[in-house]
Length: 125
Image (cartoon, rainbow, N blue to C red; front, side):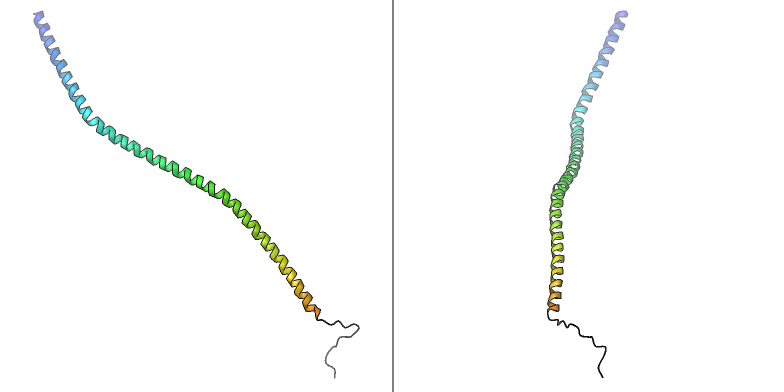
């Protein structure tokens, strides 16, 4: 009787082990079938996220770099142009003053200076 129970228990244990192995095999098969698809999708999503982040980072860095590369030389160039404009304005003012003075001299050249002559106060009658 104990032997019979032992054989029955061993038989039941074998059946349970067989069922466990079958479930393990079916689970492994399902995992092997679905895992590559899921992993591929996740890898694709991860790849897209990383690519987007890199683009944003490069775009920000590139914009900053371009601004830096163009702003500094342009500021230096504008300072030089501004200096030349100010010098030109100063020379123009000096030329205008010299021209006005020359015109004044020319206008007075033909003046006749009369010494000790009284100015007329009106028409003589």
